[in-house]
Image (cartoon, rainbow, N blue to C red; front, side, top):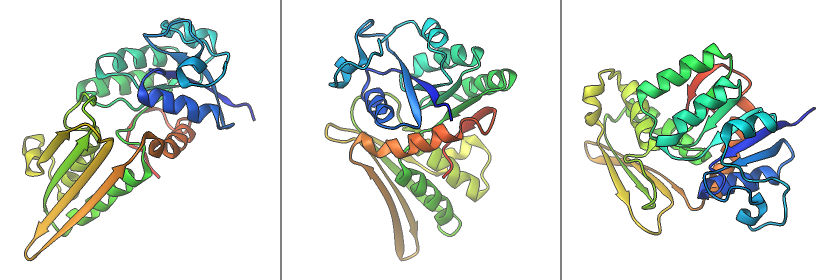
Length: 249
């Protein structure tokens, strides 16, 4: 079976580099392009600390997508860039897997409409770590029985959005389970954000009830923890059209 061609947008960033190494070491998909606003014209291998890959980094998204015949684009850039990047991909009928968080509801609706119009898919995944996805599901189940809860999310100082997409997604799971639909009451589940050197990605969900507490915690100790989830997400991209938020396992 022909391998799907993948482009990584933001290939020179920390997550972009890890994703590129993952794709180069797996035969299920072909890393066909690396796009970044820096290192234009350099071989991707020079950024990854590898030998020559034959993949030349480009800063021109539209041209690269066309020339490389891309099937799926993975975006790990910044909130200010990801919506425009995704629109360019969708207009070219290229499915998009987004690991960038901080996309507002209005932009999500626009991307959903565009993806449906072009009969292709866009998936936003706040956290690719399998443990983090399980943590969110465990928190949802716990909320049925213990409705008093707070979330503490901790990340490295370079993380731009606060609170994290994972924390927002976890809170939404809990609110759904509690039957709370009014967004103005979201603060019923407070989120506390910490940004400190030495952290990668960590979240604790604490439930309290009479005479007891329940703590659910997940820690990503390095970015390799996200890679199995990347593989699962890529395998799901051809199974739907429109926007999907969150990874199902």
